[in-house]
Image (cartoon, rainbow, N blue to C red; front, side, top):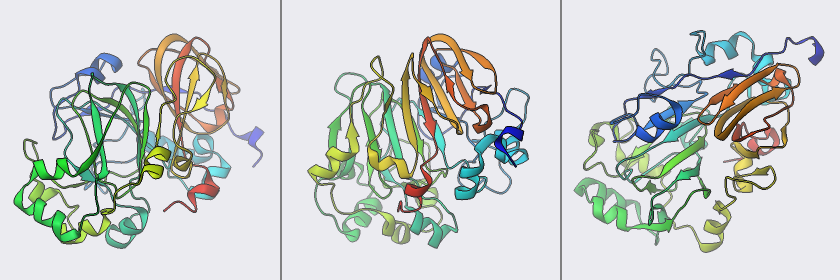
Amino acid sequence: MSDDLVAALPPVLLPTNQFPHFYRGGDRIGALRGGPGGPMRPEEWIGSTVTRFGEELSGLTGLSELPDGRLLRDAVADDPRGWLGPEHLDAFGQSSELLVKLLDPDQRLPVHFHPDKAFAKRHLALDHGKTEAWIVLEAPPGAGVGLGFTERMTKDQVLGMVERRDSGGLLAALRRRGVGRGDTILVPAGVPHAIDAGVLVLELQEPTDLSALLEWEGFAVDGERDGHLGLGFPTVLDALRLDPLDDDELTALVRAPGLTGGDPRSLLAERADGYFRAELLPREGEVGPGFAVVLVLDGSGEVRTERGGSLAVERGAALVVPWSAGRWDAPGVELVACRPPLPALAAAAP
């Protein structure tokens, strides 16, 4: 079918999609997005076509709704070519290949990690692991993240700390890095990490909800029961990276591109392109055709598409732009456009 014969779909504003979680937070998301806020809704899943872990067959938690009440997942299934485009369908099928979240912790996130594709395929029969990236939207003075161990660990060492509930030891074992607004960090699957309280993050990740907890003191979760993806800690720890990130690798994962002014630019480390992409449009510039999940950071104006019409937006708006809408721009607003991976790079991404 010629692309000219595909009915153009318009960009669509997304209602808020906050829901309860095991850690505190959510008021900053509520203020930005007009949602319900906290105290225990620290995440919003934006443009999501996947559910929380364990709800894949019958649950709805996590799935994004469109203004007409349909689930985005179902709308994509009804018109995958219009939403995703032929190149995407050839490479990935009907998976959007992308999950975007806002994270707003009012308490430090626990030390945790995510499995990679190979582990998820072998143990969970899933096609994706959970490499992720953080775009820091707000951070209090002195805030930071933990990323990778400071020195080589053994599986038995980590398992012992988990079994002893040694939260302090696990946190101290991480390499700490300060963060501020406009910093971005790519977090490869397997790397243990934590985020300080008060750090508001726009997160891109592979489209799964796979997290393994190493500690859970002070959190509303039974980590002994629910912290290991149903596999048991001796098994799930096989997905944990025990080697530290060396200086060169850490430097390659962290960027400080800023979120204001300048030219349109990629926000993430080049290595991210095999998993997802994030581009800043600072009140000018154009995005090529393709499925995109968008968050407006500042200003008010219109998203103007080549074939799908225009949509009025302002700070805090979240929207999805279908492939069939064609090229688009958004004069008058600063926004982040989150996009699926490049197919050639995704095929080689671990």
